[in-house]
Length: 244
Image 1 (cartoon, one colour):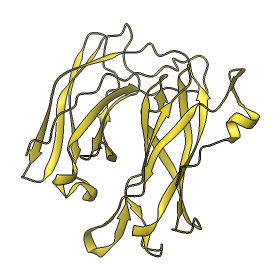
Image 2 (spheres, rainbow, N blue to C red; image 1 turned 90 degrees about the horizontal axis):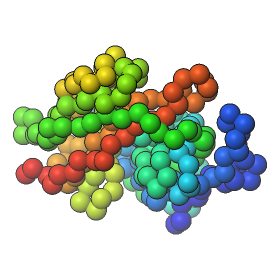
Image 3 (spheres, rainbow, N blue to C red; image 1 turned 180 degrees about the vertical axis):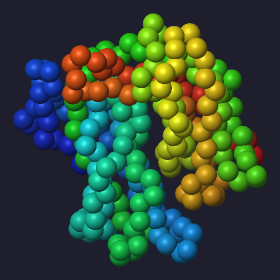
Image 4 (spheres, rainbow, N blue to C red; image 1 turned 60 degrees about the horizontal axis):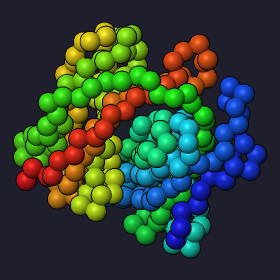
């Protein structure tokens, strides 16, 4: 079934800083990804891949998922989802996700699908930059994934709210989850900081599902404050075949 798009913005428009924003972001796919967790609970790792087909950066806000059964009946709503990166440049893909989602109360979640919903807010052109180096993937204790590397602040100002994320893909290039590191807050211009991002969640216990990964470093914007830098940063991703 073709995924429904958020059409409200294109119908009435959303105004941010006096600029109208029309719906330009489309959904490529959305997967519920249910799995049996520890204690025989049924959890899910809902993920949607989206792409900005417009000509301006957009901030993805108020993301959520509707969980529907095979007959498209609403079974549950998953709120407080996040997008990585939170701002998409023109032509860029992003990944809306929600971790540790319990779906025990949904009848037959393995036959359900999800419909993503989100707002699009227009942003300024991105200007903040980090640089990646020495990126590598390790397998810890024979089962947990870890991506390590170094981030360098190549800007004229210190980072205020930076973070490193790893997006994990299966052999079909579909996202199956997202992991995040600690923040890079206070990283001075020209300074470098090492990072490690572990992917040890239950949905990753089957290593054969993970084939490649994408590393994203972003400086989180404040889209509601005109006096702050509202730009976002991401870098060309590092991708590598499963080390096994």
